[in-house]
Length: 338
Image 1: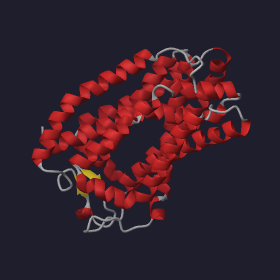
Image 2: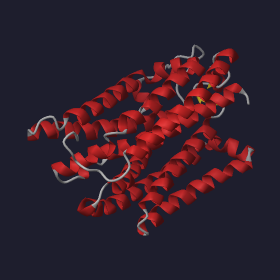
Image 3: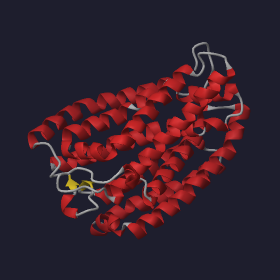
Image 4: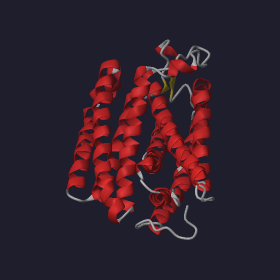
């Protein structure tokens, strides 16, 4: 396979893995204030306690792979998203601090402060991820010098903000289903209406974002039109979305969670299809687009990276499977819990 295409696909795999795994724990943070009591909030945090930091490894790996495989795109992205990236970094750091510090003291104001930090950091991080994706499709003011020529507020247009809210809705739904799987008793019963509400929010945002994309960016369908076989993915995504309420209604949250994961996989695939072969689209002139060819490292570098990736990925996948197997089951609060 063409090494440039291979690394475009591998970046998509890493981004998808991150969206599935960190998506539900960001969703738990977004839903944190739906818990009524201090104990319930501790249960929410402990549902992701053993997993959240490992999930973020996928994002770090994605950033490293982008830097090594497509350094020009990496540099241009930071020139355009520098301030949002710094806000994102602060949100991810403060989210981790909130998790670790929240239960270190029994003072009410202390816990409320870090509860708010956990919620706000999760919401801001998720929204920024969506805004970045929206701008990737919308295009950035990139000139011939491959530098971003716009301002921070140019990144906050209607379309990127709609995509940002769409990602918030996906992660909130994903997190609600995950929480239902990890809890029991009265708390689990109260989470069922929350699953329906988050699914309703997701469905509205899904239809709105889809229609907005088709109107504003019909070119996103070019690859689908060129290769009709790829229409299988949108069809499967609709079936996966339709199975979520069905599984919830039948009392099969595991199937609902798998359908939510499948939906995220399909949406990431469609993002790749909409962008290919571009990594960053210029809204000034298509000639200034950064593609998988003009933004790539040398073929030798891509080849060495391929070998490292094929040797390393099985270990990453095996580690992830083992951790999730070890920490399977319902959440129990203990002496060393958050």
